[in-house]
Length: 500
Image (spheres, rainbow, N blue to C red):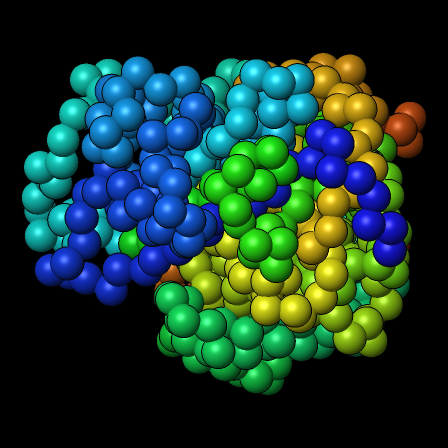
């Protein structure tokens, strides 16, 4: 590994994270931001007045409460009114993208010290909702809450008609497409459960994890009252758990600031490289349902800018909202099943907890602590946004690298890049198809409700389809749909009915 040069180097010198178990001691999200922000500043361990030298705040979107002006409200709490800042959109990539944007500005000489903060209080919101109450938190935005995505922008009419909206459905379809492309092997099912079991063991040993308990692969694969099936192949204990109360913050500075603050070399963790890319917004429009070129591009860009290869990375934290995020990432990185390196430093979104858009703040914080403790020289963290649409990757290291030019990834916006659509998706179709991805959706009582599918038409176009016929549901549940001809019939309600 090349140590490189300090020219243009940026590093994290302060980090903090906290989990509130509640219900009596949980502050509102603004108080959570302040708590970890001050803790990250204290973590620097310098006699300098760090707070007064900050010149930028990044605030990750909070799903639990919409503030009228998140940056200004936090700045006031920290005694820095008027400080430059940016609030993120809803996206699992947001913490890293805020740090990337700050790093770019540091390399242009526009910033010198940036604090990126995020918190989620969905566990508290659930408690309020259960009690039939609304939290009396401060500075509400006064605007009606925005949906997590602009439906007319992000969803095709046929996706709305078929209910291809929840992330559980879209990630399951992608997971199933990969499974089918690999021959529908039961070994892959068990391998996924083994990977998730390993994540749960990490959570069990991680202070602050929401579920500090290890699950065996057999337990994860066994449906029961506490592990009801959600969508094939995911059960409840296999997917992200967002209803947590937790926060994290990371303080990024230039090497000149780190020198001036007299931060010891062993306390500096350098942001060596980062990358961002998008797949097509509509999953049926993607050329290959079983892989993510954008994920591979983001990871490759991060490694190239860091001047490192996959073999140089000692630690990984791969975004893990659903199994597909992990399996697609290991495929993109070329990691074999027996690779000994950890895939999560926190325990992942199902077991550590998935605090809305802010999970990556926790994975970055964990990477910083692990590298400071000498557990490796380089770590990669990844993030995923929307329906495995947006991808970010970053490499952190104990030594600075050669400063590579920063590509312009544009503002962090929820815009659909129409030119990323690789296949035409039709709203209605009647005729022969080949089922390319299919999943069974279950009700809360665990009973199968319907099958959803992405189907290939003879001319290369695709359509969505659904079925409530028991024979189709059984075929999808068993894997009998793979390489089996099917047929769809257009219904008057705008859906396509699948028969196999």
